Image (tube, rainbow, N blue to C red; front, side):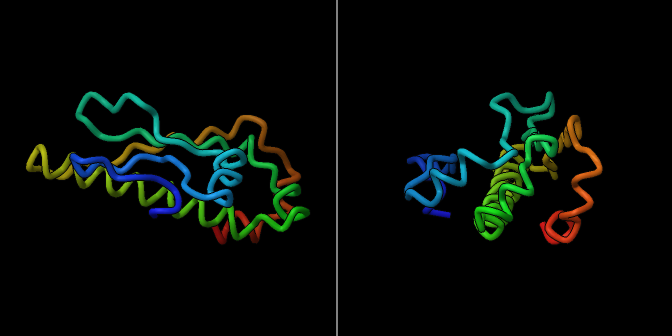
Length: 117
């Protein structure tokens, strides 16, 4: 995860791309952690599927890069939830919002990519 972000002195990891490859991925990835957590401290992860240009990812041979971005996105959710769980001494799970506005039937052409991710 060092390529995708940094860990500060308090041990908190944050997305801050450290390579050109990670910077490209961040410009095109369609998910993020919102800056404000839920009332219970849970991280809120937002995924905007309608913004994912699946045809473009395939055409530009970026599918592996986007899958790496997806893994980093999930890892960020897990690390954030774990950190909050340790702080509160109870299980805190990340909240996911999946926005499907703009997702049309064209996604069916790339269903294998969607299922794989």
